[in-house]
Image (cartoon, rainbow, N blue to C red; front, side, top):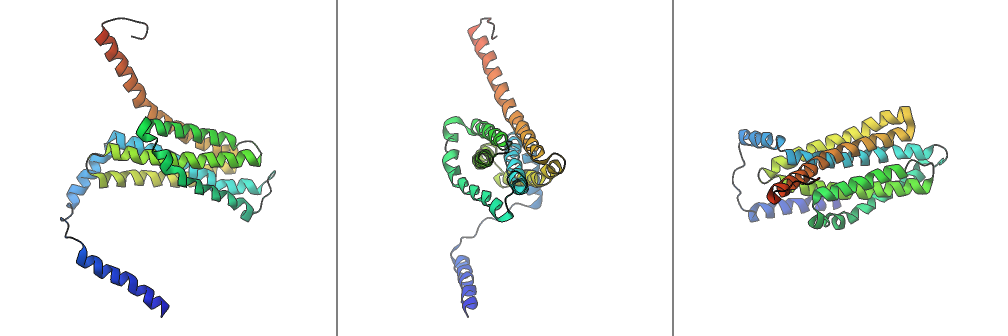
Amino acid sequence: LAVGLLACLPLAAAAMMQRSLRELPRPATPTGRLRGLGSQLRNGKLLRAAVVGGAFFFVFVGTFSYVVYRLERPPFDLGPATGSLVFLLWGLGALAPSIGRLSDRIGWQRLALTALGFSAAGLALSLPRLLPTLVTGLAIITLANFGGVTAAQLGVSAAAESERGAATAVYFTLYYFAGSLGGYLPGLAWERFAWPGVATAGFAAVAIAAAVLAAPLTLHARSRMVANCRRGNRVTEEC
């Protein structure tokens, strides 16, 4: 009887929504959707945000997928139940909205670069065979992930002036693909090099994302310098 009553709730909600919701315009044709998807796949700003968000997810999935195995080994020798307590650090994700507000001051790209620096610092702290530094490193990686992913999603919003549905689809496809790689490639590194291999895979992802982010910022700064030199009509060491 209780299960039947619970089933009545969504049925009543569906009936109410059918009566109250307005009729929306017909969706775009499959050809239009494919055209929008193709245009977003050529959107460099969107792809840059997707690479950055994917890198954070790669590091996050890779570290937390294999840290339990590390905690079961010497010098920690923790059981699976005790080692799994590190997943409580995910609660730090509640701070992500506060971190994301920094993008209003410094922009999403600089926020993402800062988060990448924290992610690298967290990986470095996880290397010593000490439980306090390992837990601290994992906490920093968690904060960097949620803050960096928030910044990347703001980058998607800035990059997609139209066809936002297609842009979101491209972003999350690449994002979760990177996450799946984060669950696989660090495992290969773990089998051969143990935890330093996992950390190295994370460092590689951070380096790729940093290079993708820094390139347009560097080009923009150089173009501004050239423009200032031309406007001033002077030759200096910077020019």
